[in-house]
Length: 214
Image (cartoon, rainbow, N blue to C red; front, side, top):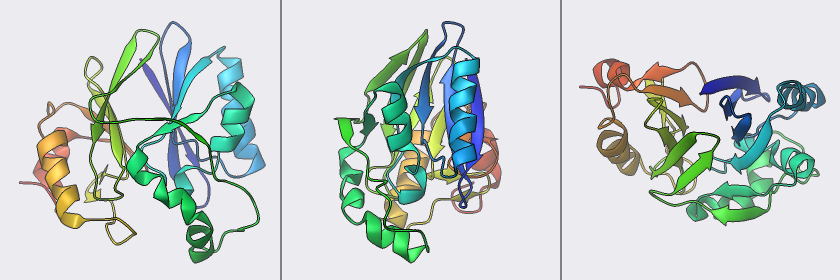
């Protein structure tokens, strides 16, 4: 499996395209904001003859959904996310205003399906298992590929840090417990692809992360 990372929008969100030799792919956290970012994402898909099977999100904070409507319209898809984050779409204007973004543009996506703990997302020869790890947001989820030993974790865990827990529905205790019981039980060599910043590994975070490390 190949993982292609794009860093989009003023908040530096990582959008991921996961695909394999079959040409089928998933897009995780479509966050393209500027026109050239949208063009870059579309051109990568077209140039590599990819077939987008799923449009999925780790969570629904505003910076992670900027490009969802655009991608959904281009490929006739609907977003899949965890139901516990749906309330965030109701206060999207407040989130945008808080961070100085234009509130006149409709970024609110339509959710076509809910993802829950232990759901499996299939594309090509790949399978992503859903792990529900609330704390950064109530509906934060992780997409784990056991065969490839990797996980896309959104803002749950970062290289040397964790997601903030002071936003609506956040919980420091929940987040720490979820990281320790659901992520730190994965093999140490598991590569972690976060919502912001560089990738890391479970082993590295267990040793050195000051919030949840040993």
